[in-house]
Image (cartoon, rainbow, N blue to C red; front, side):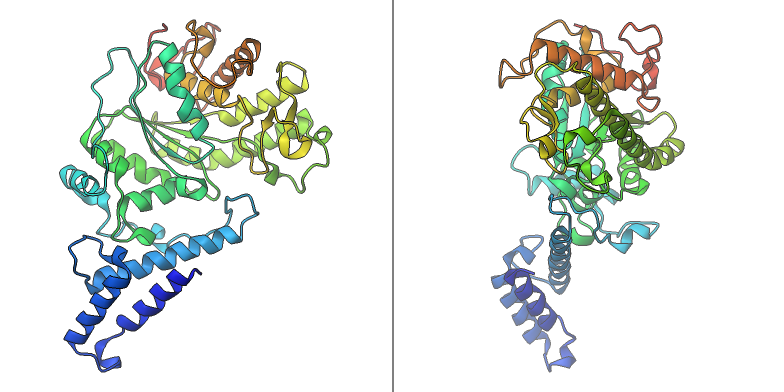
Length: 419
């Protein structure tokens, strides 16, 4: 525990004892609260210059929760993403704490975020005339490649992509963490940051996207879904299934020769089963509303393409094993290798719009190294993305006649016209 947190917890433990336990009177208690405020100004949640006992207690809970998160990270596998962590028992209750922002009216949610926002408290878009879908999203570093490239891909397809996100690294980008943070509950008690809640409740949106995290539970997503549907009953929801990771194996392979097509396929099937534990529950509870962004299928297909020599310019499967820079995966945790952010963006585009990125004729301005990925490799990414999306029964996209268009446009996509 940091010295700051030790001081905060110990001082609060002393100041917040019942007055008769240390012979305090009301004035002494108030004086100690003011002393605490001078040392820890962040404890003053409403910034009125006066610290109440309730604010001090909430501050202590935040410090203890933050330390618990820090201790969890120390116990992780060393890749920066804890697999075991404490979850507040409040998640097992039928209702969130009464001070949760989600229970407030939209104008009050907007006011709360306006006090801490450097920009607009509410982000909104008119109904796009070009057929674009207005998307809000949360997630971590596995989602960021898609969030960066989706707008670029959409622009080339003739769409101005409305996209508003609240992201974080590792666990801080998970659906559970973001719900607690936005609502100001549990570890964030009394300190809400309703970035998305303010815009969801005060503007119109078509879809919400999520990244998965270790030990997810359906309720981490259903809370978001329920809130969205309260204000936007036509919204659809998309959860990425990530992709195979080395942690699924009993040990790190000694060479890439051990990462055969069969091994990659088995890892992909394991990912599929993990994601379906969440998706099956949500799809039953919200018929026609919940879909998958099949990034795992896309990366499994890409690995098979590579092993067949069909990814021009790609040098290896996994940099953490083979050491080659231009690999599908770049590190132990499994972040994407250079160029593969395009593949994830294509999966996002294909799923959201029900159209193959192969149909895009305009040049996509990705920037970066103009020689890698090559035009040939980019074409393979587009092909793989559509194969993954059209081949996954949870994506909402079906292409039986192989024309690159969703045969069931009412299942999830907006039916945007190709440009």
